[in-house]
Length: 134
Length: 61
Image 1 (cartoon, rainbow over the protein chains, first blue to last red):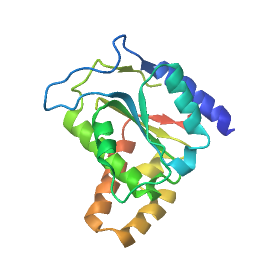
Image 2: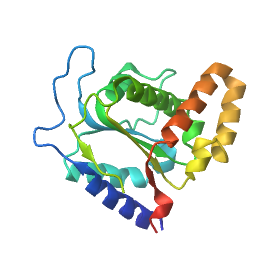
Image 3: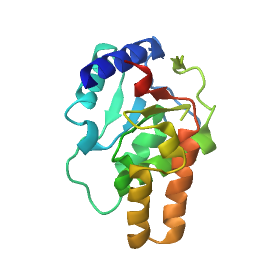
């Protein structure tokens, strides 16, 4: 059942992302973070690491989508600077809400950063990636 | 950041938006450990992001 759901979700993602010919890297002005990734994925590792995430990573690879997927099992006390920069430097954030998502402080801190970035820089990079939602 | 897409993977979007079910339990646990303004900020982020149009896995059977 879960595999079937993954398949349909991924089918959806396949039509969602249209990769631009010149890739995601694009010089921005000094006050706007430079785009380094097409997608930042925020997820709860213990919920999807062994299932959905591997299908998602494979789909990104096949579609040549440059995604930031932080799959470290151990994390420090604070959300790392590199993670914050990855969020700022991504065109799209994909938040995978799963059953245990909110039990992780790190997931919630990532989420706050994503929402802040959207409010601060939203609509600055229109046209780098096109997205259709179904 | 141009686009934020929430994916509801086997969770009801309403539970994320209004912090019900497992989200309610998790946030209640956080409130015991962390300052209230911090948890309030997390709650707001959950609500704002879950209100965006996204993809719900239960729509795919």
